[in-house]
Image (cartoon, rainbow, N blue to C red; front, side, top):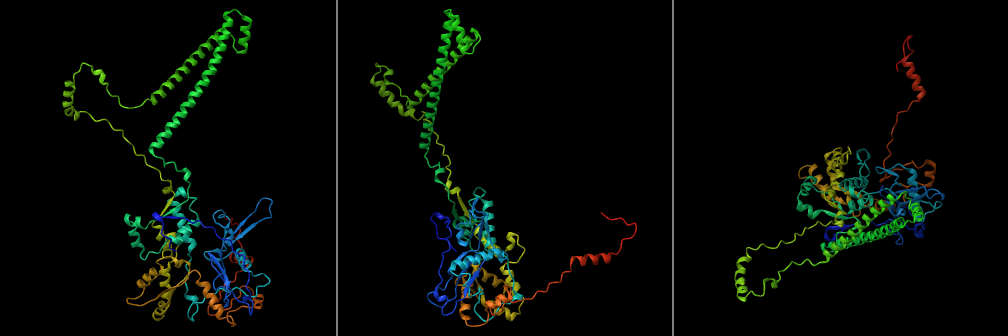
Length: 555
C-alpha cells in the first residue's frame, strides 16, 4: 500500500479505469472426475470467485475479482428499459456515483436483490450456467489449528474501508473547497491505499507533525489534473509589456478608424445641409422646402442649428484625430537623455579653458546627484500547478486511526485495542496466555504500513509485565480468506462434514445452516410472541372499565 517515490515530492493520480470482467470458459478439470467446489469470498469491497481444484490446469487463485457494486440507470428515452451494470463493468464510479448501489450496510448484506445480481454476474462470467450448478456456495475460512469460532465471546467492530474513505473525502473537501468536485471517491481511495499508514504512537506522531521540518519531509503532494491553457503567468515582464503595447496600438488604431468613419459621415451630412442652405441663399424656395421635408425639418432656423452642431462635431473630431497622431509620434521618439551640444559653448573658447574644466571635473563629480534608477516591481507569479495540489499531511495517520479510535468520526464503539482487551477479559489467565501466542492479522484493513507494530505496542501495554505474545501477519491479507476456504474445500472434498447437498437445500431452504469445524455456530434466538392488536385493545378496555356517567372526554 505504499506509493512509489515521486519526483519533487509530487505524486500524480493514476485515475485508472476498471477493466471489464472477462468471459471465462470452464475448464474440463473442474468437472472430471468429480465436480470441483466453487469458492466465493463475498466481501463488501470486492467479490472473489475461483475453483478449489488440485489440477495444475486450474489456477490456485481467484479467477474473478470485481467490486461489489451495482449501477442501475433508467436507460435512454424510448429505449429498452432499465440498464444494469455490475462489478468492474461499470468502468469508472465517478460518472455513475449517484446510481451506485451496494448490497451491504456496515459490511452486512441486506439487499438480497442486489446480492443476487452480483452472484449471477460472477457465475455467468465464470462460465457456470444456471442449469449446471452442481456445487453450492462455500466460503468458510479455516485458519491453522483445530479450534473453532467461539461465538459467545466474539466482538464485532462496525468499521472498515468505506468509513475511512468517506472520512478522508470529507476532510479534504473541507480543506480544499475550491476542488470539491475534483476530490472524488476513487482518488480518495488511492490516497488511502497508497499514502496512509498507522502511527505506532498516535499522539507522539501528531506532535512530530507540528514541526515545519518534519512536515516538509513527510507531506505528500497529490497533483490534480489541470489545463495549461489557463496558465498565463509564464510570460516575462518584457513580454507582458510588449503585449500591453500591442493591445494599446490596436485600441488606438480602432479608435482612430472609428473617428475617421464618424468624421466622414458627419462631413457628408454637413455638406448636404450646406447645399440646402445655398438653395435658400439662391432664392430657390420650392427646392428648399422639398429638401427641408426630406430632412424632416420645419424651418430655416432649425437648419442653421443643425449646421452649427455638425460643424462643432466635425471640428472636435478633427482635433481628436490630430491629438492622437501627435501622441503616437511622441511615443515613437527615442527616450535617450539629452546631451548638451558642444558647439553652443562658442568657438572662441580656448583649449586651456577646456583643460582647466577637466581638472575640476573629479571634484564636482561626487556632488552631482546620481541619475534615478527605474524601480522594478516584482509581481508575484501565480502557480496554477501548485494551486491544484493536495497537501496530505496529518491525514495520512488521522484517517486510519479510526480503527483504533472510532470516536474520531463520532462512532460510539470500541477500537481494536479495547476490543482485544474486552475479549481477553472473558477468559482465564491461562487461556489468555494461549490466545495471545497466536494473534493473527488478516483482511484489507491490515494492509496499512505499521499495523503490526501498533498491535504489538497495544498488546505490550495491556499484557502483564514480562509476559510473552506473538503477532502473525498474513502473507496476503486481502486474499487470505479465499485461500483459507480453498484449502478447506480441498481437504474436506471427500467428506460429508460441512457439505450441503442439493436435496438438503431444496428441502430445508437457504436459511439452513450445517455446522462444521470452520462454520458459524447456530444460536437459537427466542423472540416473545406478539399478541394481536385486537386482543390488546380488548384487554386494555377491560382493564380500564366503563367510564363513569357525566365524565367528560379529555382532548
